[in-house]
Image: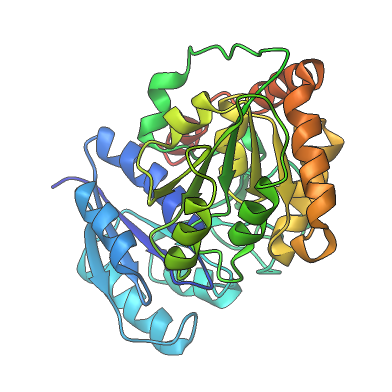
Amino acid sequence: MADLLMIRADANVNIATGHVMRCLALAQAWQDKGGEVVFVMAESTPAVEKRLKAEGMDIERIDAGLGGVQDRERSCALALARSASWVVLDGYHFGADYQQSFKAAGHKVLFLDDNGHAKKYCADLVLSQNAHADENIYQCRDSDTRLLLGPEYALLRREFAAWRDWKREIPAAGSRLLITFGGSDPDNFTLRVLEALQRVSVENFEAVVVVGGNNPHLNSLEQAVAKHTDRVRLSSDASNMPELMAWADGAVAAAGATCWEMCFLSLPALLLDLAPNQLATARRLNELGVDLHLGSPQNVSSRALVEKIQWLLSSGEERSRMSAAGRKLVDGRGVSRVISAMGN
């Protein structure tokens, strides 16, 4: 019987899809090594489940509040019943007690983390792919807990592998912009950017706006795009993100997991922190010269956004510098390193 990887992660409008999508990269690599995968989910969306099933993933649904006692007990029971070799936990509602329950049951545990929210760590492996990840965040951990820290462990999905040897050509004057705010964007910051684009003055300007399958504002976004004639097009639940990132000269994006994909494809971006958990990533990438952090959407005026978009596209030298810094940070082999650390 093939080794089974059990992934406990969730998705909804508020959580968005980032946790599940980075776990999907790990699941694909596990499959490539001959293993089997089951996603255990208390909350999900039709778009997420459709994607997972298309990738050949098994899905088990549990009826429980996120991160509570029932969640923990039912997830542990499933891991035991399915004889899981490894359990992956990815979500801010999973803490020290959740890790301990699986460890006590004899499972190996990989815990995906971003900002040290669990306080105490007893998992076999703790993975933070963020550029600001630091051992000091995880001082309160068991002596046998190993840390996998930094973008060298960035989890990129299978579709990005074919682009490992691709080289970006950087024109002196760019004209193509990618806009992406993750899988849901409940506050509809995408619409604010679309409205600002009407005032962008760039020769031969084009933009692609990517919205996730969980976005509740699709109708208003379609109406906004229609006002741009042929300059702007909408891509809903895109399955060709590497191609779109390679097409673009620059991006306006949330400072979530998409950052590592943009780094890999040398795509310079203007970053907005849509949630508190994105702030540290945005600031660190700004410090490293990879992207430009504009702040939170509430504090960025439409005028400032237009000015920064025009600056980014007009400055080939700056885009070249940012592109090189991003590609140096993420080489696309992160998921292989994680699988190797798991011993599979």
